[in-house]
Image (cartoon, rainbow, N blue to C red; front, top):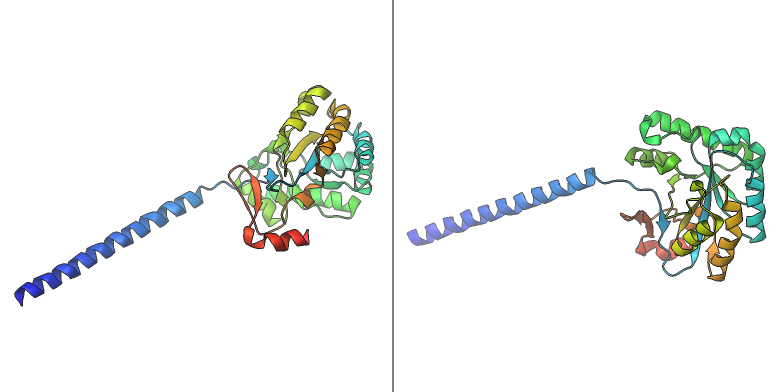
Length: 264
């Protein structure tokens, strides 16, 4: 009987120790997960997972000058391509006729901030002011409220991404940079873009860049001959039920893929 009591106590002690170990592991694991989650970096959409579907978007940032805007519209129209233009509020003030021309031609006119600041340096309230002011200016001319935002200088942090989301918009970056702002030659711009583009890419150009109008026809001809369909960014991205990986690639959640694809 005495032996049985000792064995029973030993079993109880062993079970208690095992329970303590399991609880300790659980607590440590969850603490680690919380730590990682707390340090998680929010990312904008750099590109979109489209599998093998040859679809991509081209975009233009407009913060200065409008001398080539009409030329860009004509080139895009010639190739039946609709693009996305991210415009600064101050640019809208200076060139309202260009904003209307872009919208009337069927291009998306989206938000690039009001004054082109480094957004992470602003308070949350100032970020909202930048977004709202530019949205209001664009909507007053086009009749359409922007739903996409591109941060000036491509400069963002978690608070920028979160504030944009709270304002009902998506933050858009790019995965193919034409580097046209560096005054590369038309041939250099063309080779750079056509060699780097892939299904789901978002290409960055600039309005008023020196050689972009010269490069654009060749780029569009090459992409079309390669079977690419160029569409506005709002049609490229997934509106909901998505995840963004560590490279900024947006993925549609597999359990909702069929429904979301049908709705686009």
